[in-house]
Image (cartoon, rainbow, N blue to C red; front, side):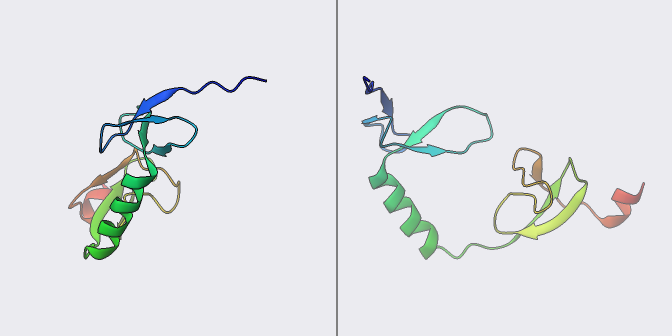
Length: 94
């Protein structure tokens, strides 16, 4: 069995890395993006050090309004239908 070494580009540092060692990055455009382990370590440390605030979000699929630090719906577990919003409950009833 032959394992192909396919080079991919890291999204952050733009270095060519092996696809087997790369980490897949989620995005809203459904493109295949990869990240090297060094950039992942650097990004995870900076995210932990920042004070992440909760934001008001709305899921178009579930029609559910919630506040969260992550843009993922707690009911359907989707991120592509979630949007930042200032919708009031009275707007949802109509």
